[in-house]
Every structure is written in structure tokens, then in C-alpha cells.
Image (cartoon, rainbow, N blue to C red):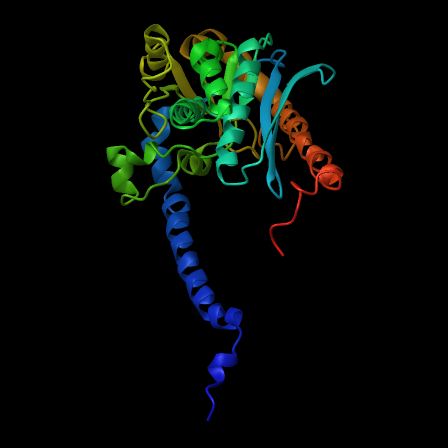
Length: 348
């Protein structure tokens, strides 16, 4: 008899493996969930000293939101990277932006790195030049430092002028200028750290489970609470290495101090409303010490609309920056007929 398995579709053969793996995946999720929700009261007890209750004192102050987005447009041999950065002010009427575009006829994965090399200087420049009393910037200073290090390294290994130009800008003083803006508060939406679960008593309580700080604090914090400030190096995973090449010795030392010394960057989580996730805020220690109420009141006001997981000005800046997606057809389809030797399909 003919072997019927030869006629079975590949997808049908694949389904049992997927179903089995989905069950394994759900069991993993149950373990993570139990570590958080099943121990919330015990965790609260262990971390209670880290949490402070706060009652809003007023409407906060004027602020702006900063974000940048990039788009990689691939058409045949032509790859275009378009980047747009925005600063949106809380009055909703005025804003500033930076737009840059680079095109290459090398269609490969390297353009993803190029996008970072274009977007990062845009974002840092807007932060550095911001005149807002409080600038709420999407992202993390730790992530920006890692991106800058990679850009500088790539500029030494790549012949691309894009990396070289970005490295010269960032290491030539732009990154340090942005970092020294005391009015800037970086707000990361992602759970970029898992440091609290590594404390001895918490680690033992969680049976060595690795739980992101955001998820852990979300299970125990009540609205109106914030954590006590911690140094950025203590509230973030990873080492804060500063690229040896590119930066001047004095700039490198200042950057290293900002990430490692007590007078530098600190981290605070704040849960302003019942529907809010704890919001991770990175800022200068001196800014927190002198403007604590203003900062918390401003974030409280900016997240008053139910369902807003981030300050309103950052959401609007994010939506504004993502307008760059509207340029895709202008750089692609609109030119394909005039340049068929470059714009052609490479996939069926």
C-alpha cells in the first residue's frame, strides 16, 4: 500500500508539534504568574520599605513629550531609512521636529542598524535642545548608552558614512549634552530591568524566579504610590560600560559618573492611578530632590485619562513621530516606474 504520509501537507504535520508546544508555553506562563500573583502580599511585606504614598499637591507644571520613530522601506535594490523625531508641548499647539532620510542600494539587514544610527542622534538632539521645564522623553538612558556604544563601534568597522557621522555627533558632545539636561525625565514603557527579584530575601521568596521589576511592582503597588529613588546602576540590569573610542577622556568620565555615582541618574517608579502601570522614570538625583512634587503632579495630570499607560505628551509625540510611515509610498511606489533598473520585485 502506498505511504499516505507523503501526501500530508507540511502544515498538517506541523500542527501536533505546535499544539504540544503551546501547552508547554502555558505551563511556563502559569509558573511566572504564580510567582507574582500568588505571593503579592508576601512580596509587599518584603518591599514595603521601598514604597512611599503620595497625594497630588496641584496640577503640575508645563511639560513636553519627546519621541522618535524610524521606517525602513525596501524596494528591490533600494533601501530607504526615514526617521522623524518630535517634541510636543502640553498646550498641544506648538512642537518642534527633526526629519532625516538616508538611501542605500544595498538591500540587507545592515539597514536596521543604520536606522538606529539615524534615529538616536535625532532623539538625543531634541532632548539636548529642549527648553521645556519638564521634558518627558520616551525610552531609557541605559538603552541610549548601549545604542551609542554600538554606533561608535560600528563606525570603526563599517565604511558607511552614516555610522561615522552619527558617532562624531554623539561622541563629539551631543550625547553628553542630552544627558546633562536636568529637565529631562526618561520614561520607559518596557520592563527593562529585573533587579528587585535578585535581592536575597525576595530571591528566596520567589524560588529564584526572574521577574521584571515592572511586573513585580505592578502586583504590589497601589495607586498614589512611588518607590524610593535608587541609583540607575542598581535599578537596571547590565553594566554601564562607556565606549573607550570616540569620546574625549573628560566626556567619558562625566558620562561614567552619571551612570555610576550617587549624584548621577536615579530611577523611580510611580503608579498615579488605579488603571496605571507603575511608570519608570529616570532623572538626575538633584532634579528629584528639588522638584519631587512638581514631577509627580505633572505625571499624575498627564495620565488622568483612563486607559493612558503613559503621559499624554509622550503618546502624542509617539503618534506624531510615527507619521513617518506615511512617506513609504512617496519613496517607493511613486518612483518605481521611473527607475525600473532599481525598483523591481525580488520575491514572488
